[in-house]
Amino acid sequence: MKILLLQHSAEDGPQRLGQWLTEAGATLDVRRLYDGDEIPSDTSGFDALVCLGGAMSAWDDETVDWLPATKALLATAVTDKTPTLAICLGAQLLTLATGGMVEPGNRGPEYGAYLTAKRDAAERDPLFGWLPMTPDVMQSHADVITELPPDAVLLFAGTGYENQAFRVGEAAWGIQFHIEADAETLRLWAAGKGSAARLGPALDEAAANMAEVWREFAHRFVTLRPRLPLIGS
Image 1 (cartoon, rainbow, N blue to C red):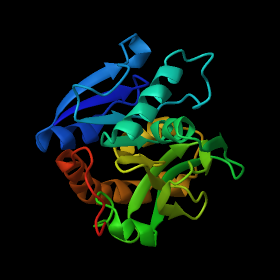
Image 2 (cartoon, rainbow, N blue to C red):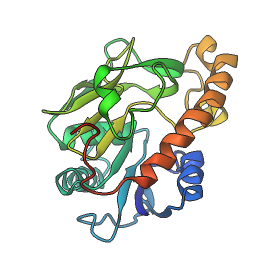
Image 3 (spheres, rainbow, N blue to C red):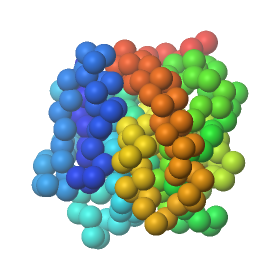
């Protein structure tokens, strides 16, 4: 699998997600958008698309000049049924690109270790179906997905903000939380912003647990192909 990977910030690279994808046999074409790398107009020549996070807001089109092209590419990937994984800001861009809504979180930001809960629809999903009911996740965001795109399927929900993971179309997934970062990186992002309890030993435990669950998740993503039918369909 050849994966086009969009990186929005020097501080938020593929990190351990990149390692997990490559050890499963994928080749990564990393486009450092903050450094002026080109965004393709479509996903031809690639088997999958990954869109990472960043500190900007998903609606900052006037100050971050590559965001409109990123959203256009994400919309095209959904239409073309290209396997797509969008993380944090990437999930918010995917949401806006396909008709959903993103706003500043009305309960404040989320930083640190959290739990998410699996929704019934996730059991039939080809990527999320095998995941545990309440996996550990690590959060670092102030904006949230307040309305999913039309026809999107909610897969994981949180206690603070509901829309934590979803699928739109047949093969595009958005996750609000971070699976690519380790505990040290997340502490750097959250310095002075998060609860000490969520950024202490609980974060190290969450990071260790995530390395088991989400490594296998990344490996499964590499096995996906366009137009993969949903389980049970």
